[in-house]
Length: 369
Image 1: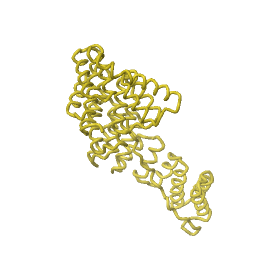
Image 2 (image 1 turned 135 degrees about the vertical axis):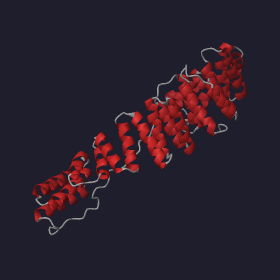
Image 3 (image 1 turned 30 degrees about the horizontal axis):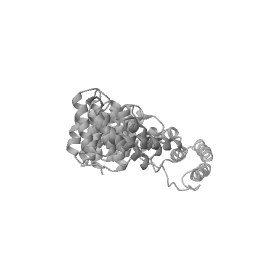
Image 4 (image 1 turned 60 degrees about the vertical axis):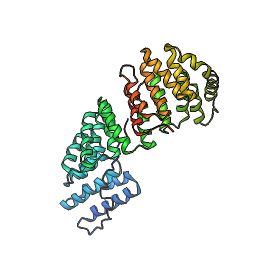
C-alpha cells in the first residue's frame, strides 16, 4: 500500500574537466583519463571503462592512482556498475555520504546502512528506511520512517511509506493512525488514489470490495473502464442496480460487449427495484438487500431504515449492513451517523478494514457530493 521514496546516486565528478597531459600525471594516464571522460559523457560506457582501466593500469604515482580511481567511480556510476564504482572510490578515501548510495544501488544494503549511519542527515535516513524495505524487514522500516518523521516532520512521502511498512508488519492500528495523518496532511484525490489502489491489492470479500469501489467513487479515484465494470458487477450481485447504472454511466458508455451486457442487466434490475425494495426491506432476513436496493435508488432514509432492520435481526450480514448504512448516511449528509456506523463494524466478517477507511473519510468530510 506505499510509494517508494526516490533518491539519486550522488553525481560523482559529474563536471569533471578534461585533464591535459601536463596536469601532474603522465601523458599516458592523462590521455586515458580524457578518453574515459569523453566516452562516458557520450554514453559509450564500454569505451569509457576500457579507457579508465588503461589509466589505472598505467598509474604509478599516488596522484595518478587517485585521479584514475575517481574517474573509475564516475565511469562505473554512469554505466550502472555501482559496486565497482564504490570499490574504486573507497580506496581514495571517499566519504560515507558518497559511498552509501552506491552500495545501496548495488544491493549491498547492510554496508550501505552502516555508511549512512556514519554520514547522518535526512537523505541518509531515507536510505536506511528504504534499505529496510528492500530487505523485507518492515519493522525496521517502521522504526526508520518514524525517526525520519521525528527529525524532519510529517512529510507526506514519509507518512505514506510508514503506513505501508506498518501494514506489512501487521500493525493495523498504527497503519490506520498514520493513514489518518496522511490524509489530513494531503486529502487530495491523488493521495486517496494511492491509498485505495494499494488497498485494493489485498484479498477481500466481494461486499468489502463493493464498499471499496463506493469509496473510490466518493474520492474521485476510479477512472478505468474495467474498474467501473467490476464495480457494476459487484453492485448487481448485491442488488444495488442503481449503483451499477451510475458506475457504468461514469465509465463513459457501454461500447464493448461486457459493458452492454452489464448495462442491460442494470436497466432491468433498476426497473424492478422500486417495487421490490419495500417488500425486501419489510422482512428482516432480506432487509439488507432491500437497503441495497434503496441505496441504488438514492432513497437514503429508507436505505438506513432497512439496514437498521438487518442489524437488529443480528444475522450473518450485520457488518455488511453497518458498512452500507454508513455509506447511505454519508450520501444523506449525516457524517455523524456514518462515523458511528463504521466504528461499530466488528473484525469477524472481513468488513472491518474497509469500514475503518470509510470512517477516516467520514472524519474529513460532512457528506458525499
